[in-house]
Image (tube, rainbow, N blue to C red):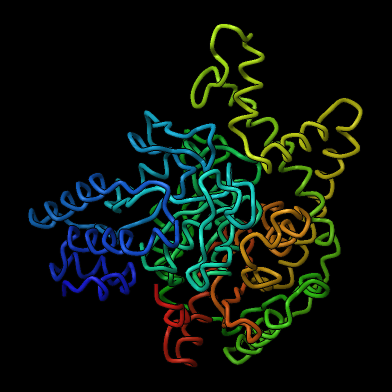
Length: 500
């Protein structure tokens, strides 16, 4: 089978199987996806950089391995779109910012190394909100990305490029990062699957830092099994990352292949609904809860009062850590340098570089974080936010004494129009209302499609939350829900996405 359209509609698992059997070559698969990128990405703008030659070289190496009779890994030859926040040797890494425009790293992030070692073909780097700060990918210094369901709407953020690449069939797999929901929220609004692993389960070495106690890389895909296969490739202990968990990777692939909720206790948190939630989102969520009951789960109502404070705590902790992390971008060591004409001091060069290189949202968060950390305000703001974080973790701990997983809507609304919230930061921040508590507590969560909202015919996401290092539960529940949806409607939801 060499038809381009047929190849790009395959799942990652199907592609890997066909390459391993010789039915397809890795070069054929890569060329099909590169052709798709060339055909549609001018409209979608999912990619910031396409590494055509590098991708084809990786694909040829996979084909050579197969011809030599070497055993191929479970994702060998499968193309992937990599969020432009992971350093990639010899390939531009901009983090969506002018301050790193044209910067080519001399080394690979641990995650990038693991992808290459697994013979995953990296197609290029995807668009994102600058330094991962945003909920819509409108904060990219290189322009917004469109949602393939409706190009006038946002594809989520900060990893909108990765989710849009999946939804437009430019790649079967992608990598995102999740600081406050930036894997799950784009997955929800594009009808794809996104997983935030347990904090520390995937190495952050070589991932440009935004908020170090919250940032977490993770898999993005169009099916639960594909996400599990990618999760297994990128997870695991890394001595280069001091926050990396030294423990075995949970059996996520096995869980995805044997999805079931029979006998499981599934929690529904009362704080994850109410004012600000779109009626169609709540309708699809309630239907999902009923579906879980039909599949044999016991539904347990939960009260987690501290979750109401999560958004406020997050927007003190994340900007404070961002203020510290982004101090390294001074115009003196790497990246953009402005005003270095012999007439300005080093301090002035730094100031001019930051003024020219950082966008409005990054500046907003740096100023907010610097204020929260300043003398006289540290305890009142940052210290108090950390106390709330402890309360949120305690609420999760109590909840998981009663249930195996928690479910909620992933986002309060479907994808909103590009520009609608650009001048209203608070309205933008509310997009992450359901996802932020998980980042503050450090446990694992997934978003997968649960239907289309009747008001606008756009995707709605179901969020599944699991305890720390119980990531396999996400895949066990997610696979069961996904299979039930496919059986009920006869096809994956993404097949309904408008053609580009």
